[in-house]
Structure formats: structure tokens, C-alpha cells
Image 1 (tube, protein in one colour):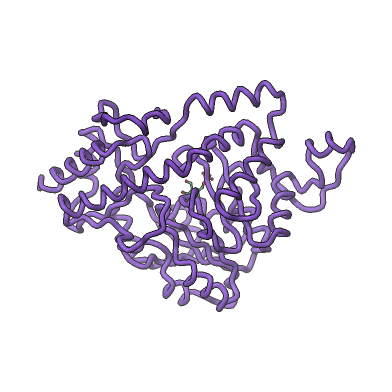
Image 2 (cartoon, helix red, strand yellow):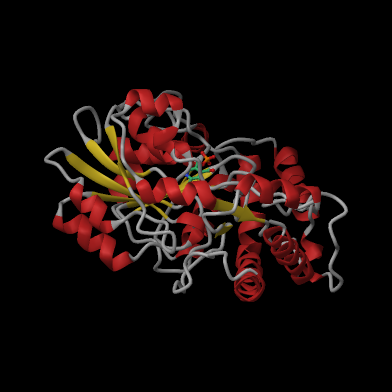
Length: 388
Ligand SMILES: Cc1ncc(COP(=O)(O)O)c(C=O)c1O
């Protein structure tokens, strides 16, 4: 585990343990925050959750936010809030985590897979999205792959011209700069490998405050009051005015979230610097490798994806790096190729998604790494690429 002081460490550590693709940074501040919640005796849906929502909203330049227990829950609530259901179609990427697509299925609607733009820009293709619009299309979900924020103007124009809800799967975009959240609603993840973590957890933002209020009620079984409010105003009962869920966040997670949020800006600066170093070293030492999003200026640098040349077998590179104590992963196995989704949904043809996923490797990137670690990864990758 990395602690926050690792960021200040001048001397890089060469990996004696496996260098992981992503790692949370947790330490004494989080332990103290947890202890304070335990000592308070109030452990779920109280002042910490509300403070976390307000701090998150402030940090991201929006008016308010609703905390939930995962980004998956956030995406599901967004679908429900927009009345998306049976008979509706939602445009989705296949190059994403399966939760993006499943949230549409939970709502009883049909996900329609859209190809990526290119290997250089592996996010939803506007042209392919436009081709897949039908009379039943209600929404489009864009996923800010790797934290690279999809073009705000292009996507808001697209959604407006086809009268669609624009939903952002912002699981990778926690810490996006002010003004970079632009959809009708956005879902964020605090899973353990994300830019900041509450172990499990999620957050929702929405343009319309009434939509956000609806989701606030729906996350707690649709009850008209929660336990804190009943304690405060002395009421002993409540009504249920909608079909809701238990998607609540607890005080322990919110307390960790508040601590992590206060460090997020510094962590993203470190991620940005490491990603920049990767880009220049890869261009120099591994010219056959593509690092996507060269022209992009807006990113939270959640992951470090690279695309290998077609003649190189990713499994071999992954094995050789692993033998040198460097973990790599793949973002993502395309959802439309999963057995279950393949049986449920008509077979989609997404040649660019399939080609990208077959050649993509994700290299280690997190704020606990040092410049020397990045140099070691690129050097090792270059040697492995030369080992034909
Ligand atoms: C793109 C994307 N969407 C959704 C999710 C789901 O997030 P959670 O694990 O918080 O439900 C993730 C998490 O890995 C993700 O990467």
C-alpha cells in the first residue's frame, strides 16, 4: 500500500514488489476520519455524507451532488430518473466497464452499441452514434475513457439535435476541472482503483435540481424522510412515494471520501506529470506503440492505455513485463463480446472497438509512482518489444 508521503519521496523505489496498474493512497488521515465516525456513534447517512456531497460538488464546480454506494447504482438511478425503460434504446460504448451497459438493462431498456472513433481517440464515435439513432433512442451514454473528457460541444449539440438525454459515465473522470461536467447527469466512481476511493462508492450530479432531488429520495427506498431528518424534526413515521432502492452511502465511506477529496487535486497533478513523462519516453523508446489522445488537453489521467503494433502479441508483452514485476491490464474486454451480452443482444459489428481492445495494454499509473518507475516501465517495454 502507498501512503501520501510517497509523493514527497525524492528517491524512486525500483519495484521489489509488483508495480500495480493502480493503487489507492490511504493513511493516517483516513484512519483518523474513520475513528471519528466510529466515536460519534452515527454511522450511516448523516452529516459526513452531506458534507461529502457538498465538497464534491464544490470541487467539480456544480451546485449539488448525491452520494450513493457505487457508480453502478448512480448510473441505474440516472436511467430511472429520466424515465428510461422498456421499448427505449440507449446508445452506449462497448469499450467500457460492463456496468455502463448493465445500468441500461436494469432499467429494462435496450443498449445499442456504438463503435469508438479510432485507436487515437477511443471514445464514442459521433458518426456511428448518429447512424444508430432510431425513433426509440432516448439517451446516449458517453464514457470519458481514461479520464479524457469527451468533446463537450460536439456531444451537447448531438444530444440536442436528436432530443436525447446526455449521460456521462464519469467513473474515470473524478477530479475533472470545473466546467468539464456538461451532460444532463453524470455518474462517478470511488471504487478502490479510481482517482480517489471510498473502497466502494459513487456520486451523481445532474443539471436539473429536481432530477437530483428525485435521485436523493430514490437512493433511500423512496422514503419521504431519512433517519437523520426524523431525529431532527421528531417525526416518527414516513411515506414512500416511489419505487426506490437501497443505494445509500454510509458515514464511514463519506468520511474517507472527504479526506481523499482534499488531496485529489495534488494527486491529479502527479498523474498528469507522470502521463506526460510516459508520452515523451514512449515516443522516444517505443515509437511503434501508440499512446492515445495525443491532442487532448483535458484529462484526469485515470489510466495509462497504450496500443501495441498489430504484429506484437499482447500476452507475450504482458508476461514479460510481469516477470519484471510490472502489472499490466486490458481496458476493456468489449461488452458486446461477453457471452451473456452476446446471447441477449443482437450481434454488433464494432471493428474499431475490437481491434483496439485486442491490442491495448494498460501500464501502471498512480500518484504513488515516481519518475524512475515510469522510466523503468518504458525501458522494460522497449526491451520486450525488441525481443521478437
Ligand atoms: C467506466 C466505468 N463505469 C462504471 C463503473 C462502475 O463503478 P462502481 O464499481 O463504482 O460501480 C466503473 C468501475 O470500474 C467504470 O470503470
